[in-house]
Length: 34
Length: 196
Image (cartoon, rainbow over all chains, first blue to last red; front, side, top):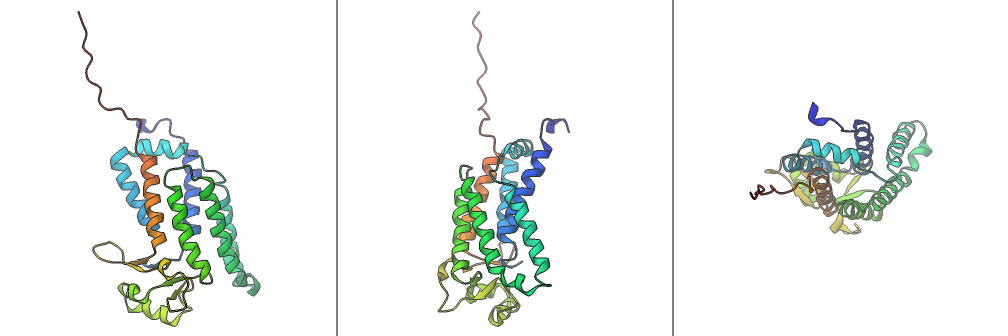
């Protein structure tokens, strides 16, 4: 795991929550099909 | 469809730039007013929970739809300096425009929805069941922005999408490439020659 040293995981989690909530809020349930 | 753009962007970005660089870039990403959306999503879930208990809450669903989209467009606009965000904004705006013009629901072409099978076509014809969609007819406003593009085999999923979806996905793909590909990587330098 040495190659991932210095990665700020807390920032990744925060940004992932923001991006996921944007995607869910703007797209959830409005596409037909699978 | 949005998830397809994200997945394709991540796969291509992984091969072009690698996971490590992508994680560093994603950690360094600063999104203006990013806190709004998790809060908005919580409010949305709360209203969804309450609307089964209180009728008046269900009646404000249309306003909630507009609030979510206007907030989303504002958020994307504030962050438009990031590569791809302007295209995402245009795509979301096109979808919002056609839904707003048609009472908060997305019109679907019956011809295009044929790829989904008779179950979905019947649901569209009956209306109601597919609450966020309705069958396009002569009175539909901005029909060219509705779900008119059928996707089926060899595409791995069967869907009907809009022009806004296509534009939005191109933006998402470009943004992920911008995040994951290391643009500062220098070309291999020629070996130095030393003079005696």
